[in-house]
Image (cartoon, rainbow, N blue to C red; front, side, top):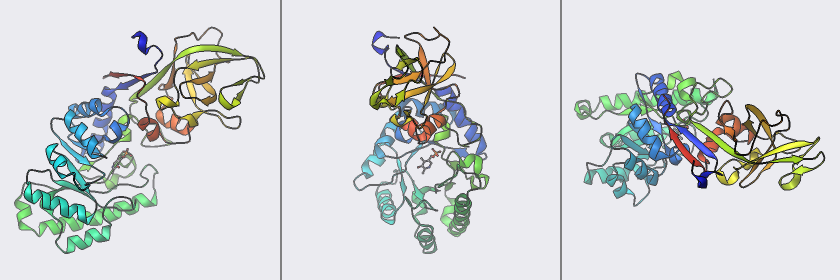
Amino acid sequence: MSRLASQAARLTIDLGALADNWRKLNALNAPGLAGAVIKADAYGLGIEKAAPALHKAGCRSFFVAHLSEGVRARAALPDGEIFVLNGLAAGDLAAYRAHRLAPVLGTMSEITAWKAYRDEEPEAERAALHVDTGMNRLGLRPEAFRDLLAAGEIPWDDLSLVMSHFVSSEVPDDMMTARQIGVFGELATLIEKARASIPELSTSNQPLRLSLCNSSGHFTAAAGRYPLSRPGYALYGGNPTPGRKNPMRAVVRLEAPVIQITPVPAGETVGYNSNFRATRDSLIATLSCGYADGYPRNAGAKPDRAGGYAIIAGRECPFAGNVSMDLITVDITRLPRGSVKIGDFATLIGDGLDIDRVGEAARTIGYEILTNLGRRYERVYVDQA
Ligand SMILES: *Cc1c(COP(=O)(O)O)cnc(C)c1O
């Protein structure tokens, strides 16, 4: 390792595990296909590395949130479709065309704008249409969609996908999931009928696909499987089945070097605001990683609540006090004497200390741990079969 990097925490991203996770989800969605959600810089892992690895595994349908992410994704992907979830803003049309991107339309005015644009630029991509079945966030309400359908006002030639998004698919037997599957299923039937009654469509070679499942949906919502799924979190090693064994391979590993080992006499405190007080003569390892690296400050330990953990010399050791900007202090008192030395790496994510547990320790979810992964880490991409 270069000397300059010697105080940086090391983030190792396993593109082989990422590809494996996609293959697993793709098999689960058979006979349909799995796409890949690569918004937010592929959940913090790096879109320029993640997108080609997924493409190589066979993925051809990608979803980003912003147009700017779509532009980056297209630069990394020679082919395959790229959908922009947050939709079409005025003035964006030419950029969609130039980078071969497809907007996910969610309002009548977006639908009208894209149709008008494609009338002029027939080579522009066909769009996706988002129908909101319960999130009340993005997309047409089902009744608005039904009205358009009944009026024959859905521009089928301009659409390649109709999709909706689950509210809480990670919760098994959630009533909301069942309701959303029901609503989407009814719409699917209506769509099929409406399209069957348009003779030109049956002869066109432009099929329409439907899409409902995110990561957890692959495991909890068998009835919600459609020709294209949209997993994100599970691709990156997050547990799509919270509370049960994680069926995915771990993709990220975060290790930070021990840069000092400090004996702390009983009664003294550690860190800002003295949130850790030594109840006996203690030994504190200081790690070169902090909230400026994206490690959550909320994982700090307080007198009345445990915080996060680091694996040092093979054992899980609790944080001692606050997570600070560049440093984390860890109580290694119970480790055998001499088992840690300066320069050793402590594991902050990995070896069973997965992103879901880190999220829990920080009172958030693993998604936020991933998307906050910092830019100061030494990033190492590996490809483990
Ligand atoms: C983020 C997102 C996904 C992916 O969800 P995961 O829970 O990460 O699998 C799928 N669809 C839409 C519309 C999203 O916004």
